[in-house]
Length: 201
Image (tube, rainbow, N blue to C red; front, side, top):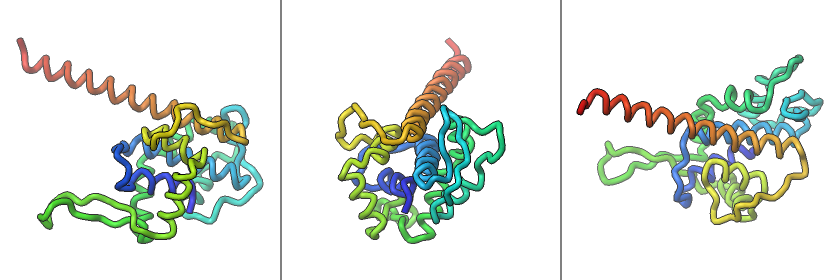
């Protein structure tokens, strides 16, 4: 399992009282992939730029896709730009992949067989591993979860990371999520103003 999969399981776990937006989660998943690539030596972060490394990508289909999509020639891509590009619909890709692997299951709410189905993690070794990392407040997982609004009662001050590149990625995820929220609020205000215009005095 990867940091991104662990993050997705924590976000989907029924124990989480916070509903995570797909856009927010997609950005955080892209950040998690990048952090795993840094850990594997497949990339490094120079300033705010992603530079290819010599190490192989982790043996995971989605992280492998992320590695294959990296810019290999100068000018290299900025972390923020990569998060937005790679993050597009990424939570849906992780949901589909984890369902296919039997890590997630759909459960219908209510008695009606036609009721809306919600996705829940299955009790597997992968789920227990993700839960263990979460309970131990593993710094990277905790910081990425915090970016999407899952704090688990953790303190506001996040620990520093051993790798400066990881620090840069986590900060970029936080900034991107805040930017996405600002866009949502602006659209909400514009839609409300438009509705009032049609409603008239």
